[in-house]
Length: 170
Image (cartoon, rainbow, N blue to C red; front, top):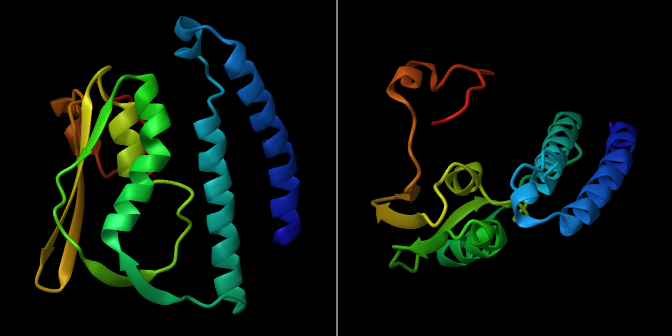
C-alpha cells in the first residue's frame, strides 16, 4: 500500500506544482475558469492519506490516539486554512462561537479544513459570508457552518444523500 501511495503521490505532486505555476500566471477572469485548481490535488492527497490510514488500521499498524482538543483553536486553524480561497472571492469568514470548550477526539490531519467549510466557500456567491459556530449541549458539541450561497435547488433535495450522485448546485 505504501508503494502505491508513492506511485500516486509523485505524479500528483508534479501536476500540482505545474498547476500552481500556471495559476500564478493567469489573469483574474481566466483564473476563475481554471480547471486544474490546486484544491483538487489537496482533495486527492487527502483521499490517498485516508486509504493508507484504513490499510494501516486493518493491518494493525496504527493506533488511534484520543486526546483533548480545544475547539476554539480548531476553529481558528480552519479559518486560517480557508481564508486565502475566501479572499480571492471576497468572502468574509466569521465566527459566532463564544466558548472555551475542550473535548476528547481522535487526532486528525489539520492540514485540510472540513468539507462543509470548503463547500461553503466554493458554492457561495462572490462577496458572500461564511459563518462558523459551535455550541455545547450536555455532553455533545455541535459545529455548524452557514453561508450566503444560493442553496440547493428544491428539485435536487431528494438526491441529497444518494451515494456517488454528482450534481451542480444552483
